[in-house]
Length: 296
Image (cartoon, rainbow, N blue to C red; front, side, top):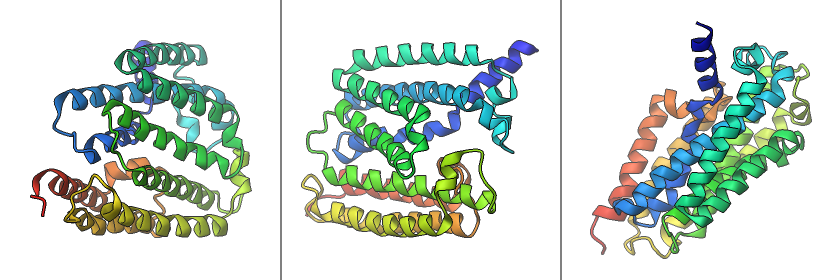
């Protein structure tokens, strides 16, 4: 019974729900026109698994470091390590094993991908112990992790024509999700001080201003990408995907400002049906524009 509880707790501590963040690695594969080229698809799928294991190693290290503070938090105290279901030693040992295996596979798969994976792990570890305590920089670092995921996918897909606009769009989207999460955490505090000192450096007015700026910048950047990136169809059919992006962003703002559900933005994709429909239609429209509609 104890072994089963520990195994289940260890799996939960790896945060499999947050593996959805690693789908960013497929961006270069799709937008560079190589989705149906098997060697690139195979390598990107393997890379996705590598990033999932590597990010889980980071989560385990983070939860060990944060366990004392998590025990004082109304919901985070139920995390397996904070609650005592998984010992700190076991968590760190498993994190080390995940790190060694994932980085080994990454280097064997592609040298550049291996370097990016190592850089991602180093940056996120630095975030765990230092950078998450620096206001604004904490969210910028998280967003940088998403850009590294995109870069990792570009390395595996040999995406030499991959537009720099996509890096801009991905960075802005990650910033929007990060600051949206911070806003929800501030709302949940309801004026009281947080056990996490960094949250005391933010307030709702500041975050609302930042979110408004980033939302507009994201829409403009994506729109510019759809008709200015050199590798896209010359008939500008990618512009037909803009409404789905706009709806998705506005739906996210609705969930944050009206429903108060921005605390775990990566999980909204798994729970909010309109968001799922918008993402699905956007994905279909992208594939149609890039792969199936005849150029004009």
